[in-house]
Length: 253
Image 1 (cartoon, one colour):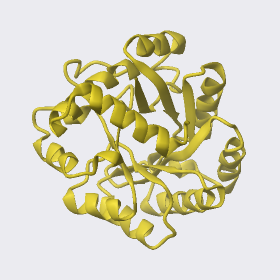
Image 2 (cartoon, rainbow, N blue to C red):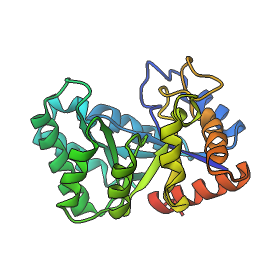
Image 3 (cartoon, one colour):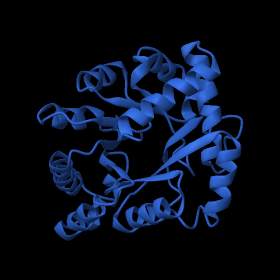
C-alpha cells in the first residue's frame, strides 16, 4: 500500500476525469491520496473530491505564489473548511522567492495568518518553499512548533538539519529519480527514516521513466522505488515505512 501525500487532482484542466485517475492509482497500489489546495477555490475542490472518494483526503490553504489575492476573508473561508472531517492539514503555505507572482510582503502576510490559524486549530502544516528555505526556517524557529511537512524538499543539509530540529517531515518526489539529483539523494540519505513520505505533486515533477509527461498519483510507485534505492532498503519496506509515516503525520488511522 502506498500513499501519495501531495497531488493536485483539484485542477480540473489537468485532471478532467478524477475517477479514472483514482482507479489507475488504486491499480498501482496507491490506497490514499492527499489533494492539496493552492487558494480558496482549489481548496474547496479538494474538499469536494474528499467527499466523493473514500481514498481522497484534503489539505486546504493558500500557496505563496497565489497570495497576491489573499485577504482576511480568504482566511475565514479556509477556516470554515477546517471543520470538514477529511481535511487533514493546512497547506500548501510558505514562501517562494523564485517567482514574482506575489511580493515577499504579500506572501508573509498570508503565511503568518495561516500559521496562526494552524496554531489555533492544532492541524499539521504542509509547506511549499522555493529559493526561500533559510527565510522560512527563520520564521518557524521563532514560533511555537507544530507538526510540519516540507513538501518536495529541495533544501541543502543545513536546511534539512534546521527542519529536523523542528520535528519536521520531508516529502520526496520525482526529482529523486533524476540522474542529476545526486546532492538531493545525499540529503535524503541523511534523514531519519521515520521523517520521510512520498508524493507526486501531480501533474508536476514526473519521475523516471515517465519524465517529460504529465504526472499522476499512480506514478508514486516510481518515487517509492527511487527512494528505496537511495536508502538501500527493499521496495516493500520503503512502502511500509512511508505509508506509516504518512498515516501518523496526517492522522489517518
